[in-house]
Image (cartoon, rainbow, N blue to C red):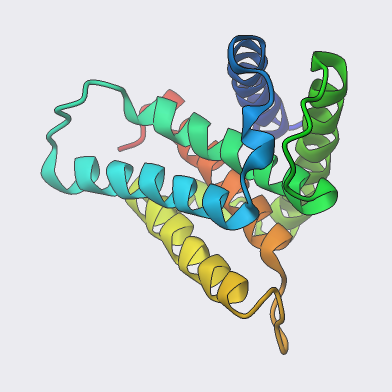
Amino acid sequence: MSNTEEQYKNIISACREVFKKKSIDYGTSWRILRASSLTDQIFIKASRIRTIQETGVNKVGEDVEGEFMAIINYCIMGLIQIKLGAEAEEMNLEKTMSLYDDQAYATFDLMVKKNHDYGEAWRDMRISSLTDLILMKILRTKQIEDNQGRTLISEGIDANYADMLNYSVFALIQIEEGVT
């Protein structure tokens, strides 16, 4: 297994642990959210990361790493919502974590394929560029949502969530490696 794959799995494992603990604390209250609401939550997190990157000031005190982890978890929630639809149904922890794992695995598989084809080009990118790509994907997703999910030639909302998740993992790997 490549170092990227191992690093990726470690980050997803840490995100999964946060997700699981929050699921124990809050249940699956997020199930009421439409995918568009989750897109807006991702936008808030990515915007905060960009502001901190641009200003160097973090007044809230929560670290950028936690924000990238939140983006990962919101993307997985979005992928689950696309699959199941938004409803107030409370799911048990076992089912919730199984759905999380299904989406995390599918996104990992996509990363492995793209990482092969792109030759790990993300390792030569700036973290700020990864943030910008996430913001661009959010704007694309919002446009697709505004078009009721219809596209002429482009990938759908799910593909954009998967890309945002992967960009966030790449940013966290770079942070762990001391890249600025």
